[in-house]
Image 1 (cartoon, one colour):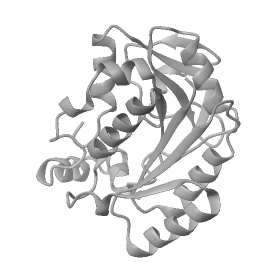
Image 2 (cartoon, rainbow, N blue to C red):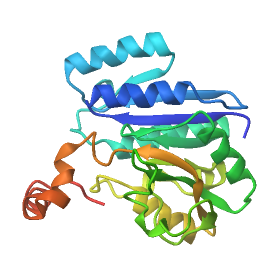
Image 3 (spheres, one colour):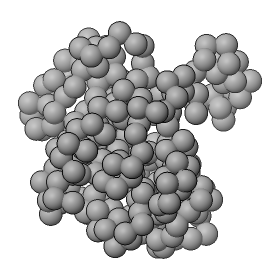
Length: 238
C-alpha cells in the first residue's frame, strides 16, 4: 500500500470521539494517510465541535446529513463510501471506532502485519480494557497473548484493516441494507473469498465497549430490555 484510508463513524459521544481522533492523528505511519470522520447525525452542538476539531487536528469531516435522510446508524453508507474511495486510490481501509484509542505504532503494525500475509483479508487489533486485559469482543483470545493468528471467528471493526485485495474482490453494494452492522458479514465473506483474517494480540488497543451507543450496554445489564428494544425497534441488526 502506498496510501491508507482511515475512517471513524461517529454519533455524538464527542469527548470519546475526540480522544480517538487525536490518537489517530498522532499515529506514526510510513505512508501518507487520509483520516475521515463520518458524522452520523450527531446533535448540532456536537457537529459544531467536530467541525472545529477538524480544522484544529486536520482530519476530514463528512456530515452524513448532507448525503442521506436515512436515520442513524448509517454504517452501510459509510462502508460503501470508504470502499469506493479506497478502490479508486488502490488502498486499504482502516476502521477505528469512536470508543477506541490507539497508540502511535498500531496503524503501521497492522499495515506491516497485513503485508506479511499475502492472503490477508482483514487484519484486526485485539481490544483491551484500561488495565491492558483483553476484553469484548475478543474474549476468545485471552489465552493467546502476543500472537498473530488466523481466526475463523469474526473480526470486530473496533480497529481493523480491510486490505486492498478484499476491497477489490467483495462489493459492499451487495450487503444487506436491512442490517445495522457488517463486521460479521464481511469477516465471513472474506473467508468465502479465499482470504484469511488475522487477529493481532501483539497490537492491543484500548476499547470502551458501546461507549458511543450506551443503550447497547443493556445487553449485559438488562438483557430483557435490550432484546425488547432490538426486536420492537429493529435495532442492532447484525
